[in-house]
Image 1 (cartoon, rainbow, N blue to C red):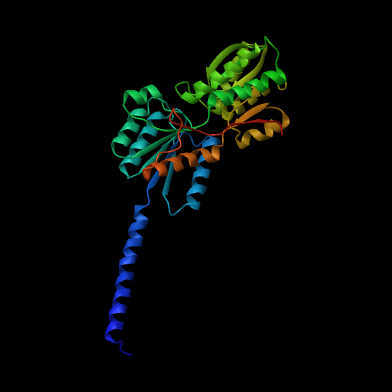
Image 2 (image 1 turned 135 degrees about the vertical axis):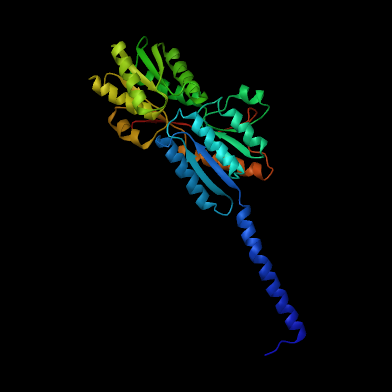
Length: 318
């Protein structure tokens, strides 16, 4: 049946609006911002948990942004992490969520990203505020109070298992990272307050094998050692092995930081006394949320120090 003239005009208008809507939808899909999550070593369970949390969040908000997640081979591979950030700049990321392997060395490439108009949010390990200031840039930090968290672990260790004058050793993360420095400071705060004797502080580079080697060295050099305080759970795993190899299980206490799954059986049977949960699965999510706000021209909910502080919880034997 042939439509009357007004009807034909209406049909043409409907068809025209449909043809316009299709390319608009495609354009809308292309306009979704690409958010790059650049982490430290994915060999560390903490960062795999962080990545899983970010991917779950993106699936639940698939219309809001695209996610590209990447990490380096080991915690000290600063050069490769810089290359990953440069790649994200070149491939059109609108925002970069960065857990830097080094608090100072990553600042120049962060400035390069910001000069290219990319929003940058710092998570996990804080970029050095003085170096940021020297480059005349400001980057919000999303993460825990590492000093406070380590103090909580150290206080629990001192109260439950040590007495004044006991010898302890600290296994630090990568010494050029702010979070390693802050955790060591927190452990020292707790040990000093309780009157313990810190006989050695050495870097285990956040890694199981290096943590094991450092722990073994300390146990050999200080036969009266009563505790090893590890800046993350990977190094704590290495310390547990060293304690066992030295025949001192139950005599030398081990504490960690991160609450990764691998540490949980050890908490249960006492090989590890305590650790600290810092919401691994949510830390990148908080960073993504801040970046999406900034991309809309909104200010993230930072404090006076440009920090969004995430929660910490002491974890002990279940």
